[in-house]
Image (cartoon, rainbow over all chains, first blue to last red):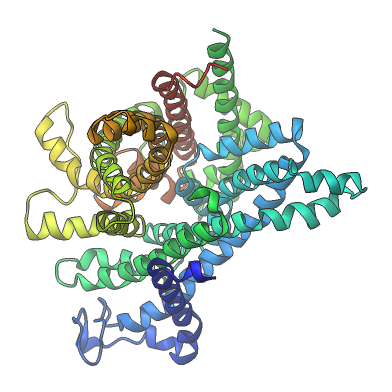
Length: 271
Length: 313
């Protein structure tokens, strides 16, 4: 446990904790209409006492928008990563456990999918399904699946060759029991590390998709959408881009720091 | 020789799979091409007629066969929004993207490799902390956020570079580099951060190996040990990672080119997606995936050349 208590680990945990707090508690404390309430006398206002983070082109308070946007951005990222695990985990385990032809066919497919840039795949799926919150989750989730499947397969392949698997097999454990009792618990650390890293990428991907108008749709608020809206007002109100941009950066930074430390703790080989 | 035969067969098979996946993904909503051409308010009979004549009622396998046949014979069809042949359009835009991809990769490698080595040599000292923190920060920001910051600083405030547009290198080379500078830098910064982290961890691994200790014991200068012995062993893995980043770059160009109104492949793909120009989406998605796959193949070949330990399999 002490190995989490490095400077990096502590900063990572603090940043993540802050963002989770904002995303979970924020919407409970801040009425939803605070993010859409327009103050016409204070359009594109810089940081003031009334609006500590400034306002956007419609006079909406950026502090409340970034707080409520946190929930959207984090929910999408989390749901997308869960989607990729739900599809990628069984694929990877089957491939690594079965080996042979099954492995060859599945991995050929996964490798081909890896040739598609994740963002391009997510954008295409989202554009084809029609952009909305649910389809953004599906799009990012599918786009991340091949990475996860690849890693799970590699780990499963490693674990399958362990003496304890052989011992379990000798004592008559069937395939399903083997996977649930012996393979899954032993590849869990790597999956957790990968999920943390994927979460960071998913937040960036959601921001990218929304920035291009193919992710979260107004009136919902997300960090990517806020940056998109700021583009036309960069000259007069650079804070409209800075506020959501910094929110994305801090969250992803927190996840990356946490992920680095997690990897050092759970997976000493990678050090 | 059998290695190359194998690889060639494997490439053809992968291209075929890429084309199938592209076709499948773009056919999630069937029949939309007709709707796209005629608009959502058009009368159902005319729509049905157009579907019939475009062959959209045929089984998917047949449609796929027709499409892949066209792709192989160079008949890529016309773009629905630009009303010009897709092949011409893509070729023209690909040049624009090639400029910024090559520029950003060059910028990224030129900084990342020395920085990563420096960081690894001074592992856990202040030099390492500074450069590792900077790199970690770098990978945590979206490319388009870098882009916005660059526009604010270099275009709006300092006025050194244009904030948008593309200039044909055939007409005015200096102007084209000028226009490519900021998009290339926006792409390059994130990549630089990523490659610095990778170079560092690769070098840390190599510097801990036995042959490094032997070289030092032999009395070789630290410079020779690090920059000749250790780095030459790191080039293979670093090149592989840089090659894999091509995929990431081709994803990022969509956002960055759109932000800078830089009319390359990324911008074109975005226009196609936004307007549901299905034939253009299919062609550009296929092309991008094919380029990524072929780049990785070339990187593998490069690995063979720089690392004699890797034998032809």
